[in-house]
Length: 151
Image 1 (cartoon, rainbow, N blue to C red):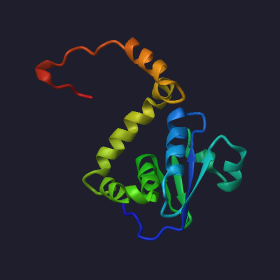
Image 2: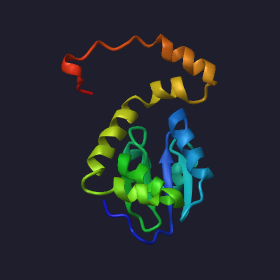
Image 3: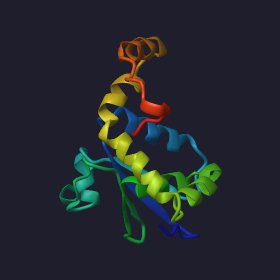
Image 4: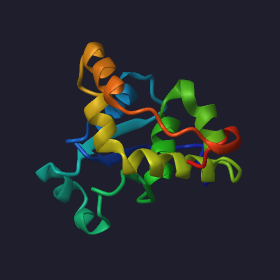
C-alpha cells in the first residue's frame, strides 16, 4: 500500500451504529491531523448524496475511505489511511502499510471486523464496571496443546 506524501483530505464511511467504529471516529477526531478527515456514517442519508453508489460497495462489511483524489481504500487499508491522518501516528501507519506488515494489519482488521458488534457490546459505550462484569462472564478457553494456540 502506497501512502501518498501529500493528501488533501479523506471521507470515511463507517458504521454509525457500531461502538468500536464510533469510538475510533471520536479518537481520530481528537488527534492533530495532517489533513482533513470527514466522517460519515454509511447509514446517514448524506452518505448516498456525498458518494452516490456507496451502498453497492457494501459499507456494512468494512469501513471505506475515499480520498479527495477519488482513490478508494477498504478495511485494513482504510484504517491505516485514517491512522495516517494523525500527525503523531504517521510513522506507525507507514509501517503498517508496508509489504511486510499490511498482511498482519489485514488479519487483525478482519478479526476485529468479524467480532466488532460483540466487542462493541463489551467494551464500547459501557462503564468500566460493566465491562469487567461482562469479561468475567466469558468462559476460560480450553488449554492449548504444547502451549500454543491457532487463532
